[in-house]
Image (cartoon, rainbow, N blue to C red; front, side, top):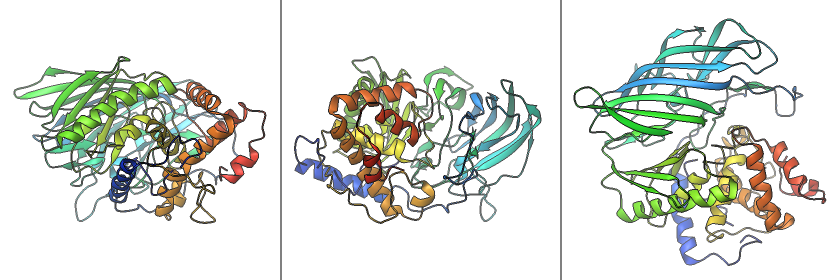
Length: 481
């Protein structure tokens, strides 16, 4: 998420020391970033599946599974426009025949179907392998009817032309000066599970994204003056005159993001063997770059020991001075630069919490944000956090497990609860279970859901399995429903 610390700040019961002056300065700076990281709230729509309390077929697996994306795009002179062809193949793992798929066009989330004659930033055309309908959910979802029902275990593919226009805003899909960010720009498959198709609306200050682990093979043809950091293992080859082709292969990731611009670059390898590649604009404060690079190297190794070894080999840090907070993608994070840091560690933690261990970010945002923030707080030894004994719930309806449909109309509560109370609840669970047991729980939970999908029910069961004490009162007290 494009921020790191919340306005509800932890003295955790496990905190060895109180918050220092440096921690409080860090906190104030990051709260300011939190307030600016997305100034509008998208209208919340109606979830496509049954209501959260409705009965569902528990055994129905998520599908389409094992997606493989093959993408070839060509950029214009400054990376503002990209066009080419995309193919996605997939398998039906559902017990029922698959008659359709949906492509999520998340890059249209801010602009919808376009205004004043200006088209949507993400456009799909010339579909093969199925029949497209009209884009829905404010042009963020495209239904493609398959030519015949796809039986369980069968595999098929659809392909289409894709055209991307980077919006003129500083955002995860946007630009800052000569630099372009293409987060959530590439079309991806929607998920169908026991609750039906997940066609939730876009939210601008949090995330709506829910995808399954996928393989990407991407070819980006661009002017040689542009450096192009991207998800996956990347290498370059000469293209046409004055052009370079950046190739990337990414396996078992949930999304693919890239950036483009005249970045300065540096590469270092962490002690545990992860390649950390840094890209920054020339006007980025040098102290911020140094701190982000240091935190990136340290955090990726530390979290690898705590949650399981980082599986992707390399990670790119993309830094500009005006980007608010940070935004996570598999193998790539976009960061602003503050001399007191903080965002880097949170976004690196997201490589596990949502990246490796997936979740439905619209319906269960706490499962990645609170877990990443808990990791962040532990990294800083709770410096700058204060947990109140009663969790300081802002209202009677606030609950840690609320969805973005609720948080869309309670924005202030979202930051306080998910970023502030959430990590404190996990700290309290650590106090109940004991530090050693909590560490084993988190690592085992990550292992058991590696490349899979986490749910609140899963986590509650995993925690209960670690103790003979009934945790029911704990969940009720902390509003984990």
